[in-house]
Image (cartoon, each protein chain N blue to C red):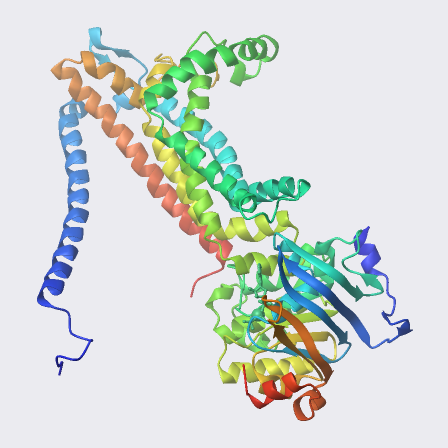
Length: 276
Length: 340
Ligand SMILES: Nc1ncnc2c1ncn2[C@@H]1O[C@H](COP(=O)(O)OP(=O)(O)OP(=O)(O)O)[C@@H](O)[C@H]1O
Ligand SMILES: [Mg+2]
């Protein structure tokens, strides 16, 4: 059973030595879409109780790396990965692992709010139903909505369409939907880019609360946001030297260090806003 | 104010006139269609009125059609119309929606891609396009079914379908004849061949409209389902199909309307017998087939009777469409949550 294998709890080993705080170790050697090499040489450890941010110019492969972490890229015809993603002591790209099982343990929130065309309640209960959850569904839904800071706003309209909420509420609904099944890792791909500053702030606060329970990886275009919320930051850049556009990880470290004392020239220039 | 050097200008007089004319033309055609529809209905109903007065509601409940004795009633035809259409709709929907799913959800393209992968041509500049092309070709072929003339379907039913199903029908009647569905034997034209051909005739409508509705479901909804760990079938049944249900159902209603009114193929295949039977192998008749067969020999007096039958067919079609619209509305609010 692939699911059972993923469920076995073992610390992740990094270079032979065991680092118990790393929940997921994503190590991409080469990543292809068809014959196009989109990302190379990118290694990002995602830590427990921390927010790991990826920044970098548009098209450098941030979303691609994030989607690698829950095998969403497998839905792209022609996708191919050389490398490993270690999670719970397993390579999630191992031959016996079912991508669907992986996604049940690693939640994802997308750039555009994407609630289903059904009621608020059914949206949140979706994952519970998939997992055949036998306990008290209503209580779980309430808990998830409270964790996503949405309960007070929707408790009287659980039967109304999820699409009738505002953009910021919809995005929090999507977060509630993702955390209802209590995944271990939560992946967020530019979750605030469709939102106004107030809604953005409320999602940022929410992320800080949620990191007590989940390991969080977030892609963002907004450097201030990365600085405000993240503990670790990875900077990706595009290598155009081979006549192609291949993204790679330039620098990874504590957010403080990346934003105030970047080691690499590309990072320095990007942080200073010399190119975008 | 505009000067000679400025590029931006207000619309010229010709542009304004063309715009107004175009809008008037579109509006005119829209009204024309509505007016034509009303005139057709009015003409038929007016022509039917004398017969309605003469035969009254007994026309709907009797089972005799005998022009020599001037006895007319159409209950068997009403039954045959509804029975054949409902059966055709069941088969047509099952196959049509399945075909739409396979074409819209990438199953076909995936299969071709997997084949190409075996010979390692999946990223080839020419062969690499094949998965999408095969998918388009298949859906065009299915839509082509809609372009085949009705009479060709009728001939095909007579010369291919009836000989093909006859042995199976004999066997079913002989061994399972106690089941009402197989209660009589197939002696040539009858309900089953008519239903088979009718299903194929309405299938392209269901598939084309269903495929369109499925393709219109935003990818991000599918991604949301996959992101939560749904399998392909779970994503399809829990998210894609419900989201597209309104469009798919619209196609089914349209197909039902087509099945109710289908004339030529049914006139050739259904057997034209004034019989009410649940048996699939019994000959039967439908309103449209009755009209097609009876009009050529109709005396002026009979025409009024046939117009009465045509009115009944119109009313049935209208009721089906209204009921369809109502069900679409109802299921949509069930599935999508209450709208505010
Ligand atoms: N499904 C796909 N099929 C083929 N190529 C893809 C696909 N998704 C992304 N790419 C390519 O991979 C590269 C990286 O894309 P990606 O979406 O990961 O960039 P990104 O860093 O997230 O950009 P942005 O900040 O604009 O969202 C791009 O060159 C893009 O064209
Ligand atoms: Mg992106």
